[in-house]
Length: 377
Image (cartoon, rainbow, N blue to C red; front, side):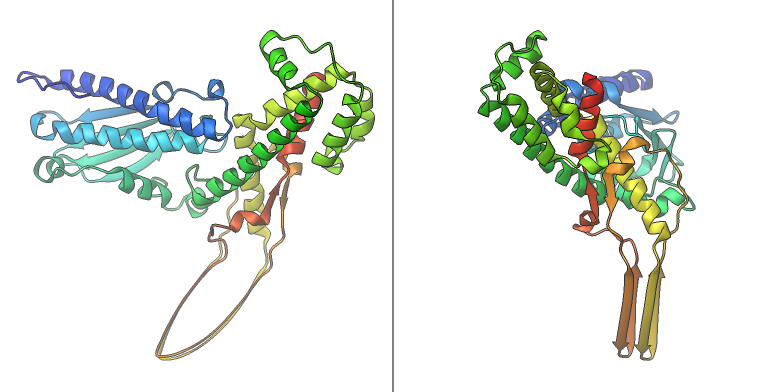
């Protein structure tokens, strides 16, 4: 909350107040972050606190009259806190592998022109002081989000900017892919719970998480039930070994521990972020190699054509998760026949659409089980 402005408040006093105000604004937004991620099955203890993960800084030029812009600057801090709230939700409260934001810095000065730049995890935004003073203008949340989505913070010649839709932590592609993955995770967790309920072990599994001790009373049919369930749930071909043989050599308590680890890995936000990164990189590689055929015939006085093909060289290590990402090959065969005085067409090979993620298959449950098997061994 804003304190009553003091008539003798100095520039230094105001900057200190802004720092405290930003911290409290982020702290308030952190509650929404946690509520949103709990709904996505992300354990609160695995989410970094918003106010300790990000910083909102205010820079002021010398000899500025603070009082006319005081309220506007606080509005600007709140808008940035709202943006960071959504950013934190978008990355499931984790540090991302491909792109990370740590701080937003707003700079106000008399001769400043508006700029929107990013470097080394920091978003630099310069705002004209006179617009804040005379027109009460600031960068509202919706405007900040739009600039980010368009990739305006990246250099115009950057290869990342040309495929920003693919790597944007808040973008439609990653959001749709993540939502689909989380729904699948929730379904899998429900399946594990039903298995444990069937053998009367759900309470025993919950108690073992708290005490660290596994159940001593496990039904004899538990092993065969667990083996049948896991074989039906995962893809043995991707695992690369005979799952039934491995599970047969585990005792009942080890199998209960395996299910516990499996469930934990399914809700591990860091691993969810990693496989989304792998999906983005794998799709980027596929798009680069894709062969497209374009056949366009136009008739008319004015014909304007715009065909985009995007090739980007990004080569990052993606680890063992790559085998759990499958891209359905796409052959683009574009034909357009147009008639009229004015014909305008635009074709973009990789423009994302709401259902574009259907071309990607993520076998996250098999990846989570493989990690669980490694952990119990």
